[in-house]
Length: 192
Image 1 (cartoon, rainbow, N blue to C red):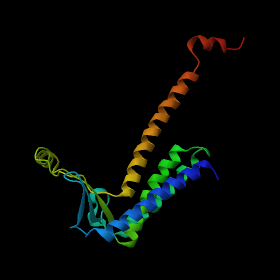
Image 2 (image 1 turned 135 degrees about the horizontal axis):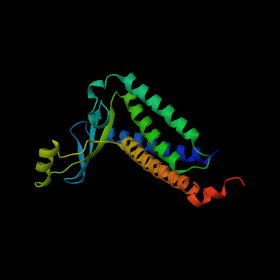
Image 3 (image 1 turned 90 degrees about the horizontal axis):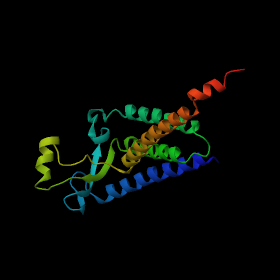
Image 4 (image 1 turned 45 degrees about the vertical axis):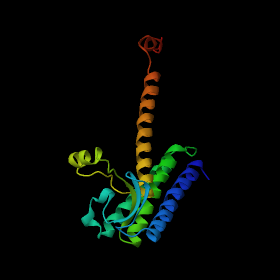
């Protein structure tokens, strides 16, 4: 089995399984919309929210349109598998990042298909008397939209993949520039 498939599969399973296990635990142990567990008081809680939209609740009105989200997931998975197929057999980094993204996409898609909404449970916020009013004034809220393990896989995978692609493009341009003949070399290449 090519190394890229192994790295993709391991990353995919860690995120997809980890996502479903943590969501199951939250559903079993934290009351929907009301319950919370303070991990770092005033900063981080485990909660139980059901998000019918996309990231941060956007497209919330579309939550009932399961076919939209399922269709998007199928197209995204096909694109990721195509990208994986294009990579060299021994590549490790990019297949891992694609696996994180795919695992996250599948984790959230399972929720949408099974429950009709995505379980979000990681809540970062502040109740600081200094920062909370300022954040509410500037941003309208003093908390980051709640998210889950699948969202972490997607975010880390996309960010790392884009950063890696940027540096690979820079490196390719640098190598290309080094391979171009220098002014003095051009005369040497002319036939005698």
